[in-house]
Length: 157
Image 1: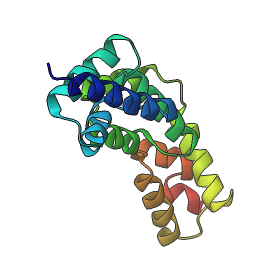
Image 2: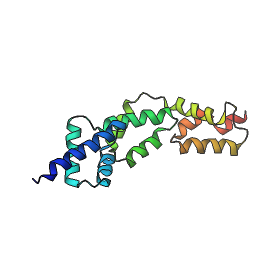
Image 3: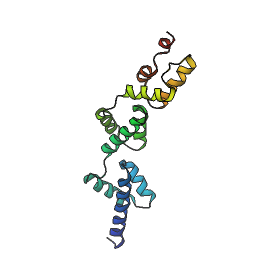
Image 4: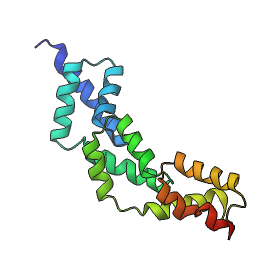
């Protein structure tokens, strides 16, 4: 081991700890950020493994945190799941975190629809479809969308 490796290891650990102090990161996110700062892949793998063993880094904790924050800001499970996948979190971890989180997605979708469009029902099909597309882009499925804005046929009655 050269005299420079321990210094680099300490520097890499400091950078990683500063990143983790700001917010939770997924394993993949942290690896990318450390790589961009010029640290080698072998060092990054060792550091990430060490951070996980000391519970400073956890994909499970990251997933729960992101689901909670995004759910509170009006995003649905599909959009959140896609964001977690894009951040390198495994599907099994996403499913587990989604199952354990205590969010009423129907109420979340209804709240988002009311916040965006008010409490009055859509007056015509194009308006209903616009609301449905908005909720779909936010990550809600058709069941939640129907709960939030109703079936179009029912809104005419």
